[in-house]
Image (cartoon, rainbow, N blue to C red; front, top):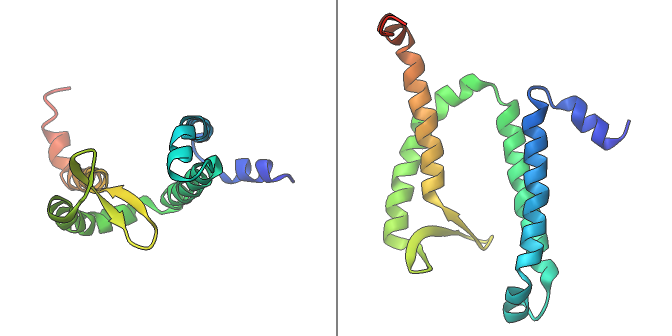
Amino acid sequence: MSIGARIYAELRGDKVIWMIVGLLTMFSLLIVYSSTGTLAYRERGGDTEFFLLKQITVLGLGLFMAYMAYIMHYMKYNKVAPYLLVIAVPLLVYTIAFGTDINDAKRWIMLPFVGITFQTSDFAKLALIIYVAREITKKQEYIKDHDGGL
């Protein structure tokens, strides 16, 4: 069995979503490689592959994290939602106080030892969505009782 067939067999759920993720991944590689030529000559002495390898590394990590989130049982998100929210708020405050200044805005923090900037507001959005979903499931019976006659 080829590796592509094995991955396809492993992916339960909506295969169209996984194909869209794959297409977006491919497009991002093409866009990064084609758009970093000037930056590569200015900062890396013409090494255009540096940015391509960096994008591949970040994409690989992101796809791995997406797959881990995919195989995790959905009830575990219910348990970690309050902790994610508690982590998100100090991260946002830290970003305001000590964030990395990029394009005259402090919206990022630099991850130590990796050299990658991280936008804490994206983490906070995800934490808030998971927390709100948790709270809605707690109030599910109340919502069903007050559905407005639908």
